[in-house]
Length: 218
Image (cartoon, rainbow, N blue to C red; front, side, top):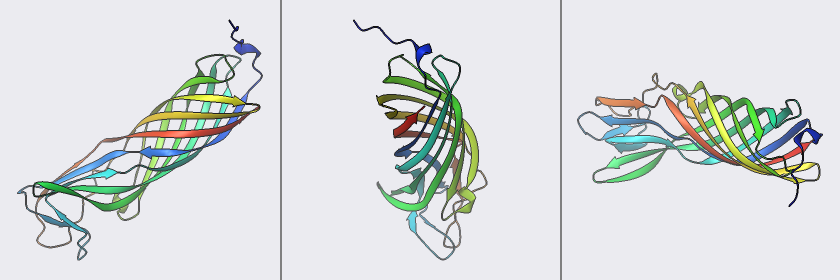
C-alpha cells in the first residue's frame, strides 16, 4: 500500500481562488390577516397580489465569491477568509381559498464576509477538508428598504480539493446561520381600510450554498 505523505513536508503556505455556485436562504417572515380576510398587498395604490396570508421565501440564486487561506505552522490547519455575493428572488407563497399561488415580492442580495479555520482531513495532495468560522452578512432588498439588515452568525463547510499541478479544483457545501432583525419591517397594504394582521419575522436565516472552487497554491 502507498504510504501517506507527511504534512510537514508540504511546501504550500497560501491558497487563493474564486468560487461560483448557488445559494438558498429559505423563509424570511410570515404574514396573516387576523380575521382571515383577503388583503391587497403592495404599496399604496399598487396592488401586487391578494391573499389572506403568505410566507416570504428566498428562492435559490447564483453565488460568486473569493477566498484566501494562510497555513498555520506546518500542520493541517489554515486561517481562511471568504467574501461572497449571492442574489435571489423573494417569493410570496400565498393562500388563496383551499389552494395557493406564488407571487414575486422582492429581490434580495446577500453580501457575506467570513473568517475561520480550515482543516485538511488527509495528508494526500488531493484531499477532503472541513471549515468552521464566523460570518457577517448584509442583506439588501430592491423594493423594500426596511428589509435591509446586517447580522452575524457562523458557517460550517465540507469540501474536496483535487490537485492539478499548482492549481486546485474543488467542490464545497456550506451551511450558515445568520441573525437578522426584520422586526421594524411591515408589509405594506395597497388599499384602505387596512385589515389587522399578524407579522412573524424570523430571528435568523439559514443559508445553504454549493460552490465550485478554483484555487492557486504557493
